[in-house]
Amino acid sequence: MLKIQDLHKTFNPGTINEKKALDGVDLLLNEGDFVTVIGGNGAGKSTVLNMIAGVYPADSGKIMVDDIEVTKLPEHRRAKYLGRVFQDPMNGTAAGRNIEENLALAARRGKRRFLGWGITAKEREEYKQKLESLGLGLEERMTSKVGLLSGGQRQAVTLLMASLKKPKLLLLDEHTAALDPKTAKKVLELTEEIVSKDNLTTLMITHNMKDAIRLGNRLIMMHEGKIIYDVRGEEKKNLKVSDLLAKFEEASGGEFANDRMILS
Image (cartoon, rainbow, N blue to C red; front, side, top):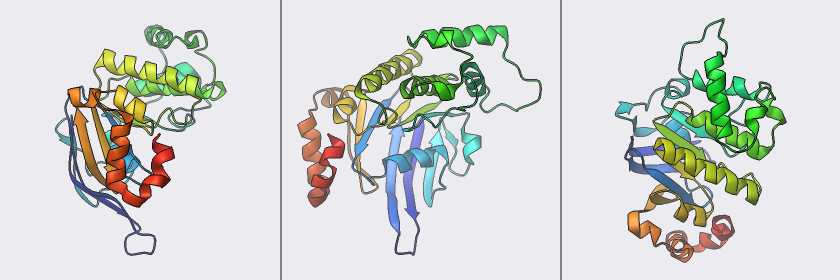
């Protein structure tokens, strides 16, 4: 479902601020894979997601989604293949529009836009059922502006929007990092339910190693723009946080102390 070959990206090349963000990344995700991604600051985690989404052009390499090469496609052309939830709950939704209008926008992603679009009674009923499945009471607030929702409610709506059209690939960029622990737990539970129900191929960045171990069928660790560890199946289930800390310490050496709090 996702194939990345020898992907390279350097920001500000030839300047004092030059930063090699990705250094020959290779990654293959099969349909239904739920992959968690961990690593210290500057490891290249978010850059990988941004490159898949088309935010940045690749210096070299290839990105394919469901056997379709998207390497040179602009961001809006890739949107029909992807769903994405950002770290900031303010991103991913239109704050000035109500909940049902945001869901309608998500449902029409990748389609040609024209005047006279309206939300049909059938669509409204579908959105109500989807919102009811979240268990947050939002089905009774469909005409409420999204900007008035709490961070957790807004992130839940964004998650629903991102998965509404059953994308080829769901990208989750530390989507619970800005939430309090109780709300983050609820959003992660919703994530598990949605991914499992629709068998969505998912790539999830997290700094929480317990979540990285518990969620999904595969875990990868990045460091200095490379994938340094890739584990799945029973081996992943048997991992402990101490195993990941040891692996990270081995890879990062002196930088380990700076990133330990971030990774814990």
